[in-house]
Length: 156
Image (cartoon, rainbow, N blue to C red; front, side, top):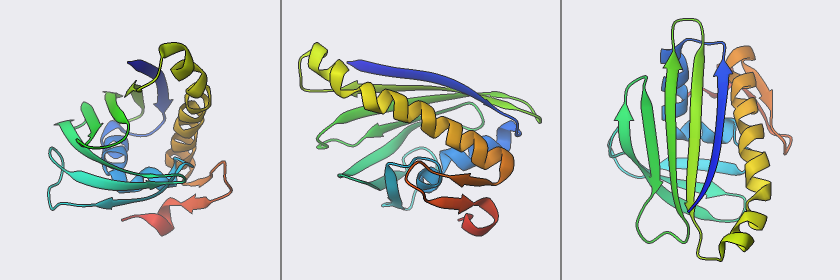
């Protein structure tokens, strides 16, 4: 099992940050590698399932823990090529929010090869969290691949 851990503080209220991040359809607005996220069932919160289209593949994942304004855990659904579990813990108040983000990968390779392969994603995850911070604090962001988002024009 390989792990990527980061924390970031966003100068926005906890409830606002949690609502935005917990709606997985917002991921393409701050994660340059994600092109599209579609909901594939009718459930909100715990039990919600999504199809994520990335630059090089597609993944199905679901929400396995949902504690409003506290914790969100998403996990790849059975049968996916890569097993990923993302644990997001939220702390904050009406002025700022800290997100503790831990991503666990189960990679079917020897650990030394897996660590080499994860060097890019480790950097990318940190950059994506910075883009999330920029988007939520300013309302605008330009992703690493040049896509631009404005919160006023992109709300679901």
